[in-house]
Image (cartoon, rainbow, N blue to C red; front, side):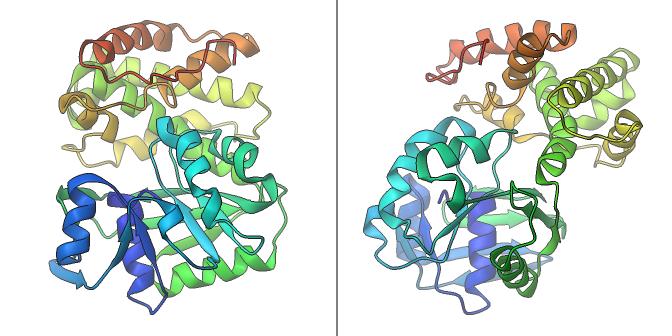
Length: 313
């Protein structure tokens, strides 16, 4: 559900191992996939999946589905979940791989909490052009688990299928922590690269932005801890070490959306830290300033989340 770069890549990987996969996409990408198949370029090779069962609406995808990979942008969560309802049976599990920290709760409210698994993914993938996905790095990792913390047969079955498709999968009994451990790297990077319109390397190499980057990480960690997530004592240092290892020319997806004047996930990343901080009494001064700047920038080209959640959420 949302067969862009991430959903398209993982869907193609599963299809390549013999699974019957339906891709839900839209626009020029959908038309290209329907007419010419889906091409994935990875490791110096191009693999073409053809023919492809691709539809614009889940209601068109007839069948009893075991698994849905939910990979739409955060601002499309509720409408996509509502559209997905006709394809969700009592035997269907919906695994969210979205950015942000609340997609599991939001999906559960629409589809039922018992239908939802929460996951997080680390992968470098982009749509080079309609119907073509580029994956320049071999990294493809998914952490997933039940919100209840249990190790269930469905978690093991899904993890096994993904591993068979070449994905590094980690099953966790504390998936909220796994989501936050990614978020404390993701939200600061997305926020600062979008505000500065500069690569990760440029931010790290400039003393002033390096200090601001660290402040954003520290604010995210403080908010996460206040929500009750058990982050390690050295969470800031761990995150900064991982950020130092990122490619210098890396740009974030939110930064690219700002550059291309598309809708942005500002409310699910930067705005989420601001809202949670205010609700929980955790100061987020660096985020407060950058959120205000980025909100106005998004509004200038219609990129704001028109269903934006309020600050008291």
